[in-house]
Image (cartoon, rainbow, N blue to C red):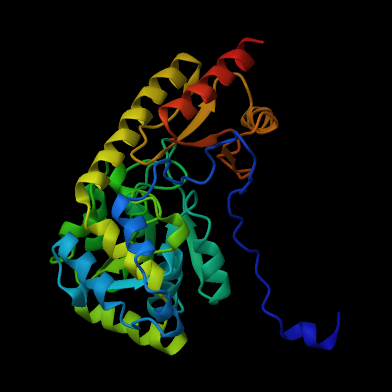
Length: 352
């Protein structure tokens, strides 16, 4: 080892889903929305004055913050925005998880959490989901440096009941509790209504899934004005200009068209429910997903075998080679036509 290598921070990085680019492929591996953004988004981008790009964007992201606050029934002082929910969550880790006690999160969850903990030198311990992939609130009663979990969980799609979320909050009043709601718009109940009661709660959401703007990287946190001030202090000490001009314009335009947002989420939910029925008929089992994906295991055929067979036919789903979930596939809900291609392939493959 070279001398300078001793001072390098080494971490095992997060592994994102594969991003193939092939004609006629069926891409169901990264939980992207199969429908385009609201029509007003394209209009906003086309009407942008390119000359403005020579200027720095508003460091407060004021237009977007105000639009999110109005949409969620909050004050602008309760909203923080960042470059996708990953950026927002990383800022939350950096800002709020500074105890020598371990933060707690599920053993089966979004795999960026342990990466951030390692990068920022935050001690952590994972709490096992039960045999049905449910969070056990009692596991979070112990002394800790903070709590974070997705709802619905990823990659399982399982919703944590509101009563269980409040139970965890009640037993953790002395630390920050973050509920990561990247998939909440597909049928789950948000913890947003608990903000007034719990000043240690942060709710994080994203435009990447239900608003079809994964390519724009827009995420946001909602919390008490005090917690938002702390987040902004860290943001301005790290990078004042996180949101670019195009992202701000696209985000505001997206929020202006709630009917389109509600319509496309209804389409995805309906397609998900039809796909569940067809997968059950083929011998798959899964929990009742409240996300835009289904986390399924087949009664006879190993998940890795199915994953490789699908991939060879340019149908991409997600496989996690990890303990407890290495016999499951995470299948993003696409259009009806895409899901029909998937089901037709599975029917033929499993019958052979």
